[in-house]
Length: 83
Image 1: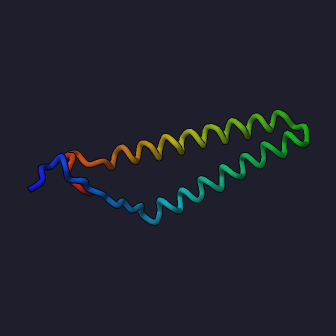
Image 2: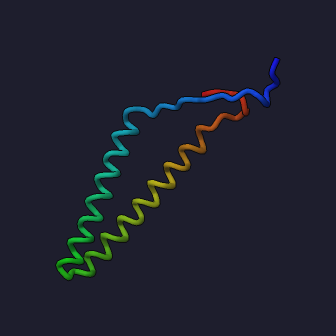
Image 3: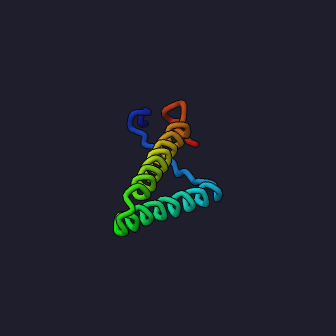
């Protein structure tokens, strides 16, 4: 018989459909803001480029923080408990 230290549990976690819709919208907005910043630099509109770059950076940091936070909240309380 094996003790609990020898047992490995693999958990598969699925995200809801609305999570993937929000993630897709977030990604599209990120691409739009980065493209706007690059186009503004190319046209020598540096003020617009800075505004778009800051907006893209804030949106990216909020998205990464939300992704990490969501992963933290879904961890099981007990080591051998599966979700």
